[in-house]
Image (cartoon, rainbow, N blue to C red):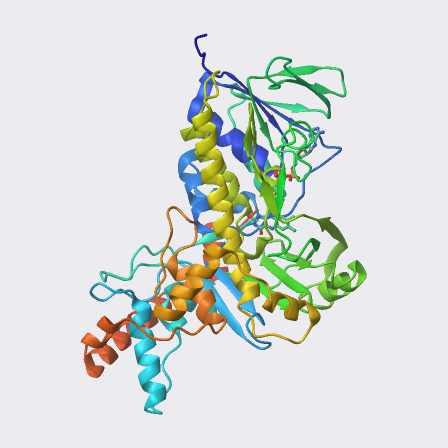
Amino acid sequence: MNASPIRRVVILGGGTAGWISAALLGRAFGSRLAIRLIESDAIGTVGVGEATIPQIQHINRFLGLDEREVLKASQGTYKLGIQFNDWGRVGDSYLHAFGDIGLPLGLIPFQHYWLRDRQERSAAASQGAAELWAYSINARACHAGRMARMERIGDTPLTGLRHAYHLDAGLYARFLRAQCDPTVVQRIEGKVVDVALREDDGFIQSLLLESGERIEGDLFIDCSGFRGLLIEETLHAGYDDWKHWLPCDRAMAVASTRVAPMRPYTQASARAAGWQWRIPLQHRSGNGHVYSSDFISDDEATATLLSHLEGEAMGEPRPLRFQTGCRRRFWHRNCIAIGLAAGFMEPLESTGIHLIQSAVSRLISLFPDSAFDAAMIDAYNRQTRFEYERIRDFLILHYRATERRDTPFWRHCAQIEPPESLRRKLDVFRASAQLFRDGEELFTDVGWLQVLIGQHVQPQRHHPLANAVTPAQLDEFLTHIRTLLDRAIDSMPSHDAFIERHCKAP
Ligand code: FAD
């Protein structure tokens, strides 16, 4: 049988996953596809997912969007990193700032020079070394509450600010919907009540709406949220549960009144049995407490959340339950799960929306025809799993690398047995201060470095080549970088002023 092109795509779900999928596929394939997106106002969306990472800019570029319009439409602010409070020890605060730190010198990364400086100063009991974040333009701008568009620092080799956004998830989904060409993407409001499978191969044939209408398709994208109506309830793709590595399984979320000035970063503050996010938007702040139900009750979690708000709560806290992990098969037969239907990892590093966009871009590059070649499906599933597992490892690091022993939850975290892939990375870093990015894993060495150093993981040595410069040369090199960054920061407007000028929501 000759394979024919896929033409009818059905997306089940109109949350962030559904609308990103519709917008990107619609832009990529245009009228070659007839896309129908089914969503149910009665069911609604999860309504959280407000912090992002810089890769979100690819969506703008692909759709030809001006980021200022995106931010205006979604009451957004700029995000330059995440501040982690009380993770390594109570009282700690460090940043995972986007972008680079310092400059490599010769063949070896910057951290080796910084480690040498720190070691020599403490051995000589001389003035303390500047902390790692003094060499990060993003961290400096976070601390100073500044924002600018700056690709490079002047005409130096130092890279400029790297940014992402904080967005109102509901407004962002609505904005993406407005970007879809209605001749390519048709929205259907209705509730799916049944799924018909083909008898010969078990592929999905059609979805039955409550109204009695039947929606047929060649390819089905399951963006139905946690339940995975197609991928799990219908096709039983299976789920790997990662609770033994990441013990949190619930969240309590509430908006609060806006606080000025708006910080250009997300805050993730550890609590007795989990952690709390704070996300500044133009019209309000987003807050949530992620926690483990093995260690505290929902009432205790709510009380903790409310007692740490900066503004006034706007409405009642909303409970969310989740199971950390991912589908055994993301793509099964003619169904691909994207978004919460594919898996879930807590938003500690704001990876939810990224996982959606990278799934769609992978689907575009491996777009099937009616033969649904097994090798392509296998490649998709392997690449997606790799991406999930590496993000998972990075999240586990935050819990595992803690010196906190003050509550049963943190004592439990300190004993988590890391997966082999994380253990190897930790062992190499401890022995050599060296970090390696495997394949196409998402987080950079600089991201890992900040969490490791921020949570007191000490390498035993720095690279011997960092000793090739004299102490005076090293001092000059480090001082020069700090001076350039000082000047760059001084030239930037405040984050609030930048928003007021470029992307103030009406
Ligand atoms: P949903 O928003 O749940 O949408 C499901 C859709 O399916 C809805 O439109 C619903 O109507 C439809 N549907 C379901 N069943 C049916 C049916 N039978 N018939 C018709 N329609 C149906 N990500 C980030 O990037 N950054 C963050 O800071 C972040 N924070 C998060 C915090 C929490 C507590 C949680 C739980 C998630 C967070 N995420 C975050 C993840 C992010 O929220 C999701 O990745 C994103 O919202 C995508 O959700 P979704 O579209 O897959 O599902």
